[in-house]
Length: 210
Ligand SMILES: [Zn+2]
Image 1 (cartoon, rainbow, N blue to C red):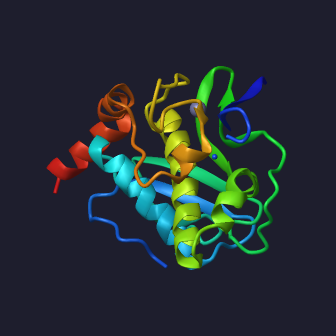
Image 2: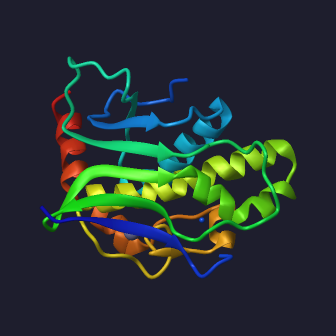
């Protein structure tokens, strides 16, 4: 079986508790962190994913993969693994090795609902800029960047596409400035792909059935 990864990388170096959820959330994100993140980082990550996906009408129920219960059923789901240290402790001003910030699994040309986000590599790309920020801002900026990379991978999974956009969250490469900017959204084409996705239709049907 041929396994490939769809990688999101950074444009040429240097330049990547329970969350509020509505009652209409048949799309689940099963999350596992190989190293637990500080709650403030995870909250900023979730807020950013919600903000990026809101214009496309996608909402998610967040679940811990290790605590997953068999009784819950979902119309759509994705399993996300966060690798490395997902906090902003022990930063240093040096850039680290390049490589993918996040990736989605593909098998025999089929996009699988499994994605990974490399926390360590993401912070390595802009730790110099993070160090220059006040502590609270640093945590939020880092969590936001993780959310942007995750939203990119969720786009591949739920829009069921390997394609990339020319700008916005759907780009194949991010600059440090894009990862740290106050706002970063999908381009119109990617947003439209998500709106016409099977996942979006599932949400609409769930709303009609209530
Ligand atoms: Zn991609």
